[in-house]
Amino acid sequence: MDLLLLRKTLIGLFAALASAVIISKLRRKRLNLPPGPFSLPLVGSWLQIGNNLDQHDFKNYAKKFGDLFLLRMGTRSIAVISSKDVAKEVLLTQGKEFGSRSRNIVFDIFTGKGQDLVFSEYGEHWRKMRRIVTVPFFTNKVVQHYRANWEAEAAALVDDVRNNPAAATEGIVLRHRLELMVYNNVYKIMCDKRFQGMDDPLFVKLKSINGERSRLGQSLEYNFGDFVPFFRPFLRRYLKICREVTRRRLNFYKNSFIEERKEIASTRGTEINNNGLKCGIDHFLEAQQKGEINEDHVLYIVENMNVAAIETTIWAFEWTIAELINNPKIQTKLRTELDTILGPGHQITEPDTYKLPYLHAVIKESLRLRMVVPCLVPHMNVHQAKLRDYDIPPECRIYINAWWLANDPAHWKKPEEFRPERFLEEEANIEANGNDMKYIPFGVGRRSCPGISIALPVLGITLGRLVQNFELLPPPGQEKIDTMENNGQFAMRMRYHANIVLKPRSFD
Ligand code: HEM
Picture 1 (tube, rainbow, N blue to C red):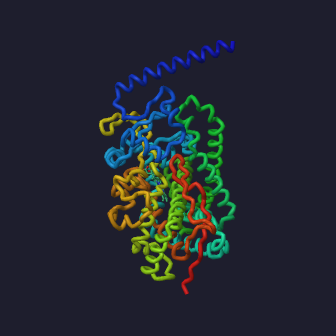
Picture 2: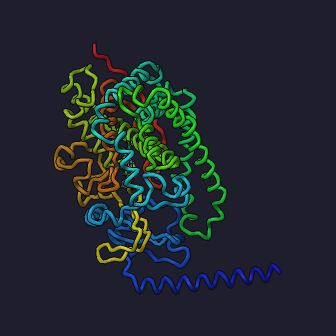
Picture 3: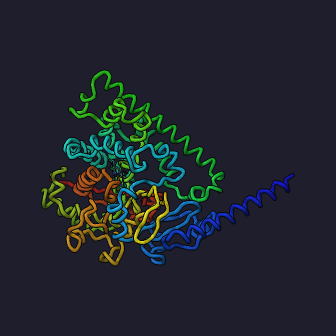
C-alpha cells in the first residue's frame, strides 16, 4: 500500500516536473525575458541563491547580468533594477503599471492581503487610503501644528539623558530612549496620546507586540516557502505564529487606542483635546462613518503607521548617531555650525533647521550610505509589461536597488566614505525628495514615502539637540561603534544596538 502511494507520488512529481520544464521552455520562447542566472523548473534559482537576498547580492548579480535582470525564485519572478534610467521608467514614466506592491506570504497575513495602505494594489482602494491618511499626517499644516511637540519631545530626551549618570560614564543604549520619543511623536498625531516614560505599561506592551511583528516580517529565513509553494507545509508553524501575532496586534490597537478615541469623540467631540485639530484616528473613523472604508481598514492604517512611521525613523537615528561617533571631526564640524549660527545654548527649533546646511548634509549623507529601505518597498506590475525591450511577466516583484544607485562609484566620488561635504560641493543640487534618480532614499513617484515631511524635521531637531547638548562618544575601551549591518526583507538595520557615551556640554 505504502509502495503504491510512493509510486503514485513519484509519478505525480515527475509529471509536474516535466510539464514545468515544457511550460517554462515555451514561455521563454514566447517572452523576451531579462537575463538572469540559470533556473530550474519548480525551484528556479533558489538552489544556487538560497534565502538571503539583499542589496549587496543584487549589486553583484547586476555586475554579471546587467542593470535589469530577472531572478526566478520558485514560482516568484523578481526583477532587479540597478540603473537610474530603468528606475525612472518604473517609478515615474510607467508609475501606474508598476505602482502595485508585491507581498510575500507573511505580509499577506500582516496586511489582510493588501487591505492596508503600504501593501495595497495600485487603484481605488490605495488612492482612498492615501487620501485619508494625508490630511492628519502629511500636510504642511501638520508640521506647523506639531513642530513644538517634536521640539518638546527632543528636549525631554535631552533632559532624561542629562539626568542619567550612566550616560556620561559607562554609556547607555540611546536607542531605547529614542524609541519612546519617536512613538510619542507619532502617537500624538495619530491619537493625541503621550506615553509617560519607558516603563509606561501601554508603551512596553506596544513595543513588544510591534517588535514581534518586525522580527517575523523582516526575517529572510521564510523565503524558501514563499518562493517554492511545495515547501510551504514546512512553514505551517511560522505562519500560524504570524496569524496569531496579527490577531493580537490588531485587537490591541482596537482596544487600547481606537475605542478610547471613539469614547472621547462621543462624549467631548474630537477637537477638544488637540488644540482644535482632529487626530489621525478621528479622521479614519470619520471616513469609516461615511462608508469610505471599513473597520478593518482603520486597523490596518494604524498598523501601517506603527511600522512605516516608527521603525524607519528609529533605524535612521541609530545609523546617523553611529556615523557621528565614528567620524568625530564631522560631529565637531556640525556642533560648530550649530553654535555659530544659532549661538551656544539656543536650542534648535524646526524653523532653525533651514539655516543649517551642514546638518542637512549630515542627514542626507546618512540616508545615502545607510539607506534604511535599500531596495524600496517592492513594487509590482499586475499585468505583463515592457521594460526596455524586455517582457516583464505579470505580478513580477520589482526591487529598485536604490542603495546601489546612491553608492555606485561610477556616479559618486568615493561613495564608501561618510562625507556630508559632498552634498555641499559636487552634489549640492541633490535633495532627498528624489529630484535626481541616483538618490531616492524615500522613493519617488506615486508610491513614494509621504512621511518625508515628518521624518526630515524630526531627524533635524533631534540630532541637532543631541549634538548641541552632548559630545557623543563610543563606550570606554572602544574606538568605534560596530556598524555591522542586519539586512531584512525591506530593511537595512544596525546589527547591534550601540552602547554610547553622551558627555553633557555646559553653556555657562
Ligand atoms: C527616515 C525615515 C523614513 C524613510 C527612510 C522612509 C522610506 C520609505 C520608502 C523607501 C518607502 C517606499 C517607497 C517606494 O516603494 O517607492 C516608504 C513608503 C511609505 N512611508 Fe516612509 N520612510 C520614512 C519615514 C516615514 C514616516 C515618518 C512615515 C509616516 C508618518 C512614513 C510613511 C510611509 C508610507 C505610508 C509609505 C507607503 C506609501 C504608499 O505605498 O503609497 N514613512 N517610506
